[in-house]
Length: 436
Ligand code: AMP
Image (tube, rainbow, N blue to C red; front, side):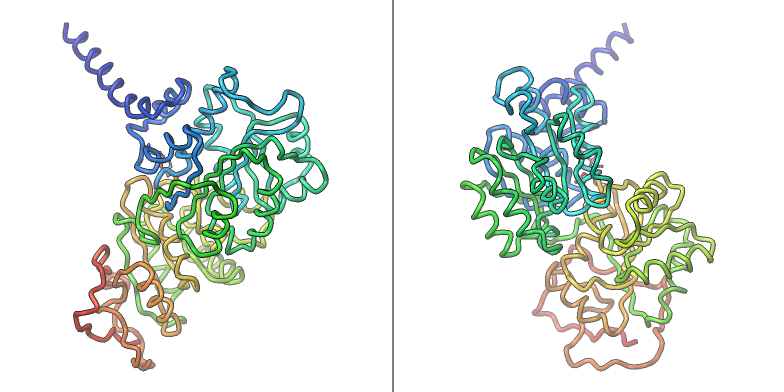
């Protein structure tokens, strides 16, 4: 009797959990997939994007990583594919070597991750996915395009190469996702994207996702989208509230010693350390390993094989510290990153939001620590302006503050948490920051 009751409750609970995804109108194999992944209900961006994508609308989504945005577009893409297979919607002509959906991403790593997500969410329907990225052998890509795929996940440069050599046809591609559009802008991909968009079907549905909305992205949207619906899941460039942010004022020469102290702390489960230069990444990786902290480096000069290996070691936990340039700042989905350290402050304020977004994912809490030497204070001020948060210990700097040469008087353990989530109030007088 009791067992029956428990079973009835479990069934009721399962129904309840499923219903929220069910209400979004997703096909049964997708409901099974999300349920098997333990997703209880759609995240806010999923709840908003999925029905609109199913309805065929163009959408601009302002969302950071960690919000569940990948599933927000992958699930409706797979849903459409399921309907296409059932003959409910039209797809490319059989044998035409065309593909229905194109997803563009700025980096190979992000493209790989999206392709992995498609396989994961599509595990009960086996979509054919083509990964078309630079730095990888083009032959398997050419073979996949020739054999036929449903969805292509690509970086813009390599896709253009295949298009120009006639190996990729986009005339029947009717669904396009531009993921991390602002990073694609930073990387100079806009002309390539425009060329790609011009070659796709006129009856195209476009989804543009971006953490920020700079003017060139708005212009791109105006040129290629039809009355797009705008969805914003958090205010532009606002770090998630569950990330505790600390800024440590420090001399450049003391940074590596301080970093070693910090990473040796027990609460650091898995950390990403951001540096400005590739050489800086190599040097720091070496120093950390010498100090007995198992680290691995990731930057744009590494071969694709080295990059994949580094990520795999970090993801598996074999190396608990990833030292990286901004190439790793966006999109990477690694669970359990407890700490992000800005060893060098990012030169572009938006990068700060992306970098620290590597922690505090999927609702977990995280810590972001930024090392700021005197020359980097202006960068922190830019970040404060962008995020509307007060980050520097003791409040923001006065413009006329002069540097002093003394060493910082406080240690890592004393670093003060910044007032996260506390909006800056310009009316209040601020004490000058601690001097260096
Ligand atoms: P993303 O923003 O796409 O990088 O996703 C961040 C993380 O959230 C990934 O690890 C996903 O597996 C996870 N995730 C996505 N959707 C859900 C959901 N509805 N419930 C719980 N976790 C989710």
